[in-house]
Image (cartoon, rainbow, N blue to C red; front, side, top):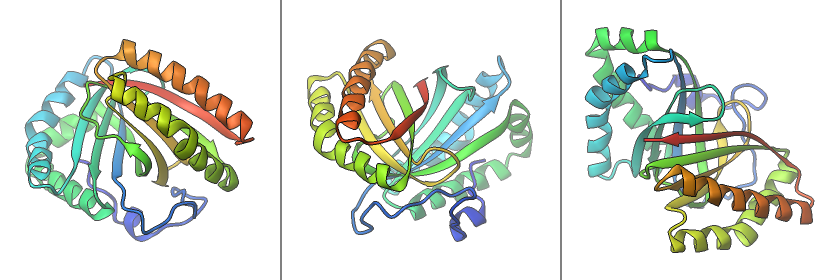
Length: 240
């Protein structure tokens, strides 16, 4: 179901479906995340959830057990934007994500009735591949917040520096206190829209929203001091 189209992996072109810049050091080891947002018929999402749990979950669970993937998750919409479900797959390389997608695609192909039913319910989707620049977000918490940012190349470099030097200590401290269970500042490698994203994960959405409120305040102040022009976009809240 999440099989990645070949052209996404073999053709990278600025200005089309791919947003890529030169702000990151290629030698840095980091996590990569494949992220799919599904637009589904209201009230029918539980059937889609059951199909994912029955067909895809065993595939991704096994890949996590063998170390081929770091983690994966299937999240339900709480608030923000119009997508209803979020799939995330996190691994050590784009190849690891691709391999997981191929296995899941084969499992779905063996169940054509489920494929048809899923596509009837979740009729469209958007895909992104993110590279983690700072932090660790594994998607295993009960609640997740994702916030997108649109930056030009100079602003993106400045934002990366602000996150590393100013906000990472704050977010790490919040994680040590238990207010957060993970966070990551990520670069968009493939997909339309924003070229940066901040993800926060925690045990419940009430506490996570309070954490995001403080993070946003600190972020706005740091960006203003450094004259970093990154426009925040969609703010989305998800739960398992």
